[in-house]
Image 1 (cartoon, rainbow, N blue to C red):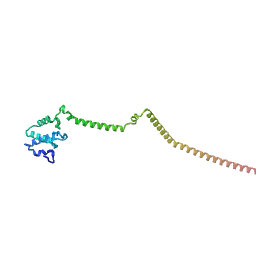
Image 2 (cartoon, rainbow, N blue to C red):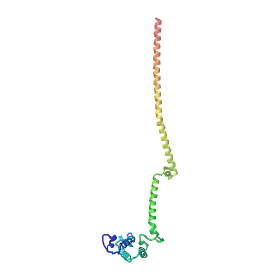
Image 3 (cartoon, rainbow, N blue to C red):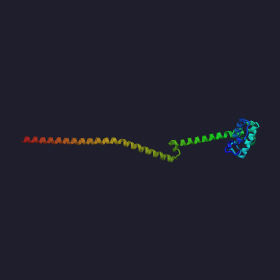
Image 4 (cartoon, one colour):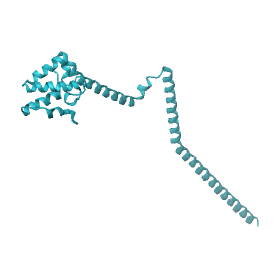
Length: 205
């Protein structure tokens, strides 16, 4: 019975009257838990007690016992824990409902944790600022107001620079025009004086 495939090694040395008996035996040793290993069924366990229970199961199958009778026999001696499919009753509620409830709790905790992390990453500034003291909040507000005022002033100065340059250019052009006009007027005056002097000189002759 120490073959390399322990799951169904014992079946090869057992004789069954029919395929139905063999299928019944296989189903039962898959369902029953090894009392020693607990995380393995009888089919997958090589423990001595598992070998004894497989032999007892085979004997009862050969005697024509039903699945219910064999289960009752095992549960009376080893408790409901012997079966991976125990009957649903108050004493077995833990076996039936604890695993799915545990799974739900773990899944819910994981979802809640992820949602909390995501909420913290997108939390607005006002919520973050609420953790500051009154003095810190006031200092922060003043700093923000000062920066905002500085930004507005800088933007206003930048927007006025083109206007100032236009005004300066206009003044420069006006000054040039005045100088040119002054030169023209002076030239006309000098020319008029020269003509008058020439006329006076002619009259005296």
